[in-house]
Image (cartoon, rainbow, N blue to C red; front, side, top):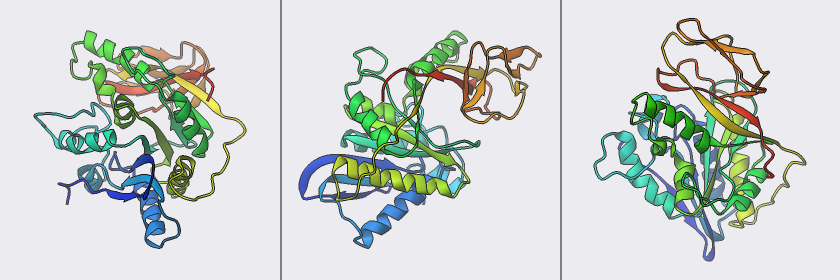
Length: 314
């Protein structure tokens, strides 16, 4: 069945924070589903119990995409995640259920995986600010959560990089994708509701170890928030901190990469990244990293992101 949204909610008798964990926001990213299933098995076997606050587990957030084993159902659920008075597609209908659930919680852990090789990483939000794009007031708590999940690569800057790309799309007349709200996904919506959130990219889609990364992260989040009597492992001694600074769109189906890129491959200023359909070279303007390269991106959508070191403390 694909016409439902199924959640498991466990509440402790003592007050505490409310944590929600999502799996399969993208239907071909199943490590979060497997990790949540392991946690549910732990709870069923009474290996540990929620004693304070609440834990909500959503193994499959996009059932239609999950049934098809595709990234999306009708569109990307993790873009333009907003309630709608006139839902037009599968993802709009999911958002009308999911958004109130997010708003009812304090913390979100969203479990994902990626197509190319590379190590797991955590996506965090902005520093505390009262600006118009993504005002926020829980950066310290969010950073502490990110530090305890396990991976040592921390990435930030999604909304600001996306907003720059959205402005270019608007200038090209692509109004829907040119709306900065199109960059709002689960974590951005959670922050808009006054909570905090991180996305954990657990590993490659087909890596069986990715679900282990997700399972450990759920336990760490539960322990950090004090929902259960679980041991809390300390953070790593050092982290690699990166900031997304730019998104480059694929403009034509003939645009192609110069080589097969993995996320976080390093490039130096002047390195050839790819070519446009007319042969124009796309080169790195400065030293940095290639992130989220998508050789199958449709014209007018994100082809790759560019990241540079971040000096912001964790």
